[in-house]
Image (cartoon, rainbow, N blue to C red; front, top):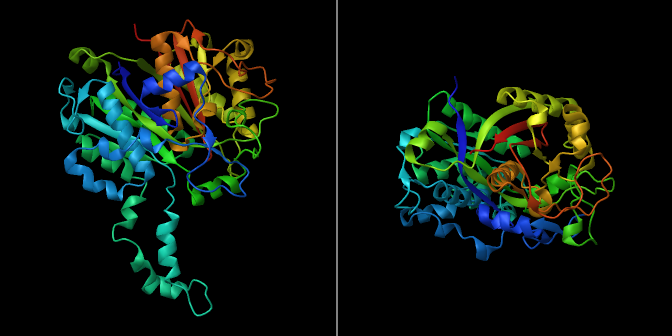
Length: 437
């Protein structure tokens, strides 16, 4: 028999704020975090709306130990988000690590605490690059690569690269919280968070750790990453729309997605360890599976492969489709991705697909990419705890046979929930979460 795993702490971070309470309260009241972008001037881009975390609501210096504050200088935005989320998740789980001032928390031996974090393709700060490039111009005013290689690069700060390596998220989190168990970084776009959870789940099952910090974080709200998403055709064409009208999951008149910054960390823990320390599980991780779709255009998603991930996750959980009471799909508003996801749900659940309640997060936070799955999973855990569903935002015309239209928050009878992702690189995940009595 394999070791059972539960989620005991959730630290989502996004435009809605920091922590599960901030996210749950916003989604209960139907308050979106999308707003006109301020990170930079979106100018000619088709989408001027994003999910930005207000600087007054989160400062990374306030969540790291005083002895570690010098390291903040080499943290890019993605790292800051991960570090902030980790601190919140640890406190929420009632654990104690060197990284949090939580005297009442349960101390966990460092070698029994792992860490798996999903990260994205981190873009360098444009201003930092501009200073170096401007010093590399030749007589014709163009950047000269020979000059760049011999002297221009020297105008970058000495520790420049350490800000932008994807594994820096897990690096800083493991140092701050003294995680000496198995650690890994996964870079598979929107599926990164769930893949990290799957890694943590397997590590705990085989006895290599008693708990893991698991999830992901990313911000594409900078000119270089924003341009990549625009070029891939993923952004909504919504210059003249109100923020709440932009993301329309599963709608016939869907326009594309809006980006957000954020994600979060979860505490994944062995049920026996949680019980022994008197912890309180949010939900049990009952099943997990992943598949790969051969997509090459940055847009595609394959219904067969998403359906296969769902089927295998149900088999892993030893459950039937009839045992699932609600689904948290990716639901990003990109028509081709939504169509594949909707078709996969209908293939697996048949006529029940029209009855299954959907919980949509992207209309609230924007697509947080590598961190998006953590927000989905955290909200699903809270749904199971509260036996309730948040309000559903969607101004589009939904005619796909799924319950994706607007609805108010309300009570629900929930035994098991399914969380899905379909990433830009073709990786698909399915996670089955169950209620803990």
